[in-house]
Image (cartoon, rainbow, N blue to C red; front, side, top):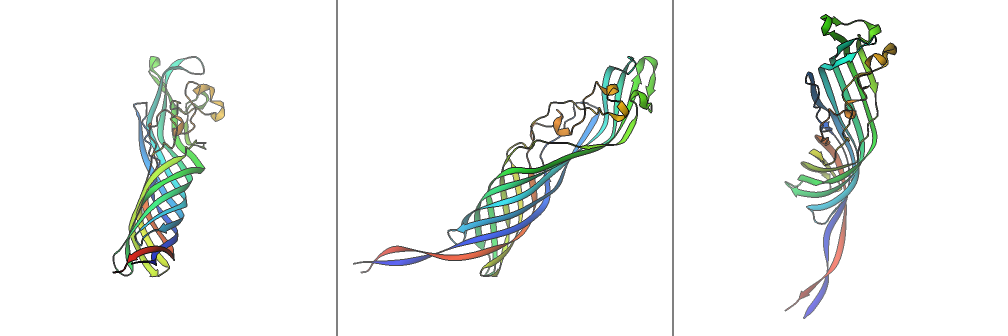
Length: 291
């Protein structure tokens, strides 16, 4: 004898909002072509704002989609001596030009709108406390970007034939510029990243959970295209562009060939947020046999 009975399965949806912050980098390294120039690569602050929706097929497992607004940043510090040998001065005399980089800080910031696809796993640890795991991938679209540099650079002339070093002669292009600075444009490519979040969730009530995660993101696409320009500091200080015509202008480290081939964005940080639970029931027939 057969009997068909409706059965109910518990599912729930969740809407979550969160804010996260920590450390980020754009993943590049500066590799100076000039042997007497040194470079240090530094990260910057990173941050994410997240709004998401998840459907939990069981009390433990769910899938989600959402939107992030994220910041990644980095900077490069240069110092040392850049050399141009066998050039001529404004009077046609041969000499070696030295650009002494007392300091140069070049900073980049990018802001992305990201679409994350997330797999959720939630494991109860007690009546109110849960282990929270999130893993997934996201697609990022750059919406804002900025870059700037500030440098202290001194130009000197080495006249080896005369055993003479010239400096502080502004009219010949030998001067110190202690506040050489500018902003510049950067071209940023779209991103595909993987992310992982681990943390705890606490049930404030049946419909609201507070959660805190540590997270990490890793990008698979280069942020920057490789530049082609050599390192140089030509600028039109009091009409001295002609005196430095043998060297390129400086339009940011990302435009030079001193950048590594890879520039993959990375971010690690701590995230806190709220998850709003919406339980619902799905009924489906179950065939049972009575004896």
